[in-house]
Length: 255
Ligand code: PGA
Image 1: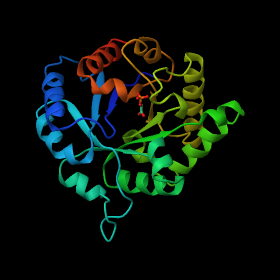
Image 2 (image 1 turned 45 degrees about the horizontal axis):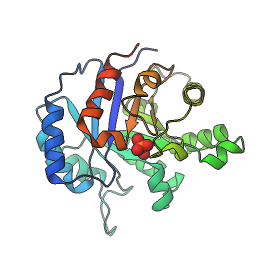
Image 3 (image 1 turned 90 degrees about the vertical axis):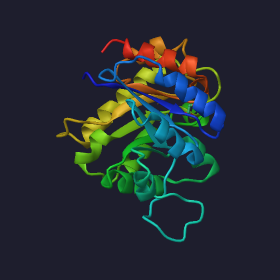
Image 4 (image 1 turned 180 degrees about the vertical axis):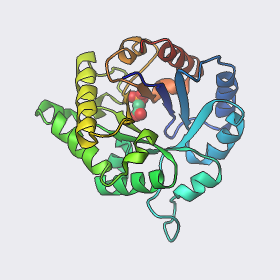
């Protein structure tokens, strides 16, 4: 299936106002074909409005790195879908492994967030992936399937085109070495088949992006794999030159 590619920059808890400003100035000079590739930047929460203002006249979109699963109320420190929409944010990341690990996010919480975000018109990138131990024990596919099914529980088919699945094998995140191409291909093929099984009638299944030590050297091979619709970039997205290189190589990848 030919689908538009997508490149996410996940800045995590990095950069500051000055560096973000410089990055965006550089990024906005990049000539890219928005019919071929979507760019989505996920800055730290406090820089969300600033980033949105700076890219407002461009084809670049902005994602929050998280949201909460209630509309409002006594949830100190949390930010709602309504608030994100209020400032013009159109995307949200849900279920990143660092949040599952450090903030103890469960599949149930992730599902509630996916439901609320999609029902209220936000686009979602929902992340999943196995640990090294799970891969070693041959549990990769059962883990991925469990996370996928539980994250998308009760999600209406009409919202599937607003969802991107981010496959991120946990042990390669931030390691400087991406997963083996054959493992990426296999996992993406598996997710793609399972999505077809889950939604046999849907014509607009979620795109599937790979994340985990993507850089300007390995992007060319990764992006041309079957069922890889884009990438989620952490470390390499902090450097605008590297990030732009990844975007351009994605734009010029085979369909
Ligand atoms: P990385 O991070 O590119 O630094 O491995 C990816 C991610 O966690 O989304």
